[in-house]
Amino acid sequence: MLWTGKFRAKRPLRLGEHAKKVEETVEELGKQLRAWVRGEAVQADSVSEREHAADLVKREIRLELARVRKIPLPKDRVLELLWHQDEIADLSQDAALLMALRRPSLGLELEDAFRALGEALSKAVNTYVQAIVAFDSAYSAGRLAEKAQDISAQIDLVNRIEHESDLLEREIVATIYKREDLPPFDRYHLVQMVLVLGGTVDQVESAAGDLALLMAASR
Image (cartoon, rainbow, N blue to C red; front, side, top):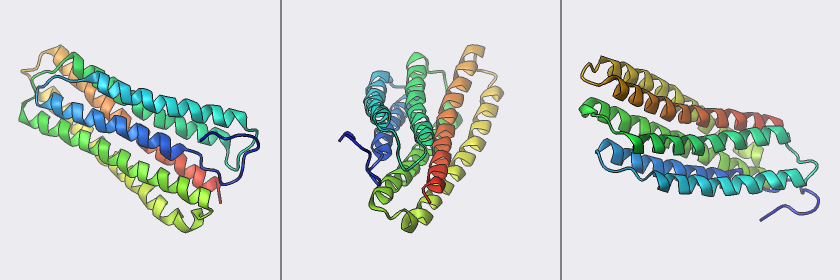
């Protein structure tokens, strides 16, 4: 539902709606990542389709924000959060395209490591989506103060997951460089995979940080 006329305080910002579409993109990436680890064909187009669906919602929200002169929250912070959510979907698409291009020999250790990194990304996004959906609902209902502690706890959990993901990324890169049997280009490709997947988790943390700022601004 689009905003029309004068903006009404406590109207849902639709950030949660967009975040759910982004989560669907990440879920599809996780499915393709598991296929890639098993050595099966990667359907990158299926990730791109979900990224496009998220893009459509993002564009609607931007247009809605442009139509109103003022909202109860800083518009630049809302747009910044929306941008970080969009980057999660964009990087998921990039990761799927990388996987479709090449599947080097992994071995059991790297197979387990990439599965773990995919699970960390999925967990971070799921936790973030719960937080932003709760924020949208509580804000529109005028119950943000009541729900603030729970939302903040979810934001803190996203930060912890991102830290754990960082440690895992370092371990994976170290393992890749220890694999002397890997050709240089395969080693480079795998490191790029780690960087893109890890960068996606970083964007989730950035979105959570923006949400924390929005909560502070709404008090």
